[in-house]
Image (cartoon, rainbow, N blue to C red; front, side, top):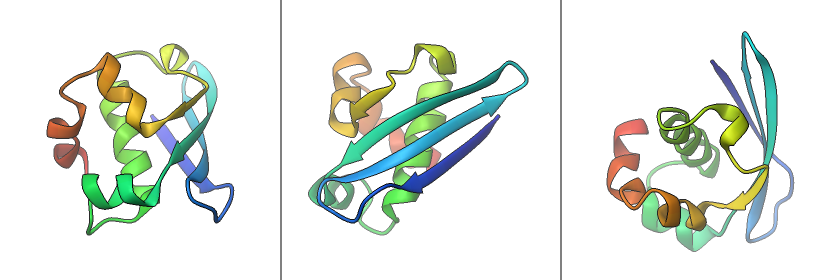
Amino acid sequence: MDISVARANSGDPAEFEVVVRDGGGESRHAVTMAQKTRERLAPDKSAEDVVEATFKFLLDREPKESILTRFDITVIARYFPEFEQELPRYL
């Protein structure tokens, strides 16, 4: 599984283009994350690191095709309440 994260803008919230590739093809995602969210989740990590770790977390729970194509990082906890507690394991 290959996860590619590229920053799409320099604003706040930042937007990232994420491509997940495996033997079955690829999926593309647009992800936003506010600076304050990154600081809360992982103050010592880059935004790109947090987005990549987020996808590792999600891929442990669902196939790439089931991940929303466009979302903000903060919505993940609605689907997976353990997200913020588990995220450090993926960083």
